[in-house]
Amino acid sequence: MKLFVIATVLAVAAAAPSSYKPEYKAPAYAAPAYAAPAYAAPSYSAPAYAAPAYAAPAYAAPAYAKDNKYAGITITSQSDERNLDGSSQWSYAQSDYTTREESQVQKKMQGVAYDSYGKATYEDVMGNTNKGSSYWVSPEGEKFTLTWVADEQGFKPKGDHLPVAPVHVYELPVAPVHEYELPVAPALPYKRTGLGYSGNSYY
Image (tube, rainbow, N blue to C red; front, side, top):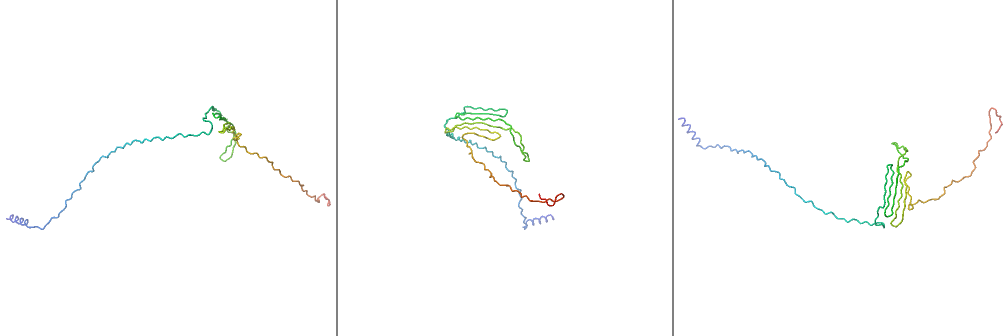
């Protein structure tokens, strides 16, 4: 009998409308994880360009006008001698009649050396001395000859075509001569006094 009552109560309760509304909760979904796609790096082949071909510019050879009346000048003779002692000599001749010869020798001469204090000392040193000559003809047909010597006294050239310093002729000034008599001191009388001299003697 008790079971029947309890079943009846439960049936009534289930049939009666209920005011209870359950709270709705949105379902939580986990964010999907996507693996990054692996792409192979693209490979590009370098473009092949043909090297440009430039034609070399063609320049005409310059034409030089000769400034003398000889069309082609050539060497007709030549010599060159070098010695172990430092001396040497050489020469040449050309088809335009130009010639040149030159020689040099070692010579002991006096040189000057300075120390750290600026004091000069003189000592013998070895130096070159040079001498030679040259001959040539100008385009106008004028002939020139030049000789020279270079040593411890400097370079000394000689030639008729070289300028010559003018020579001044003058007389050296002479100091004037003065004629005069030297003054003479006057003779004044004086008196000697003292032991052995009389009182009135004048000399």
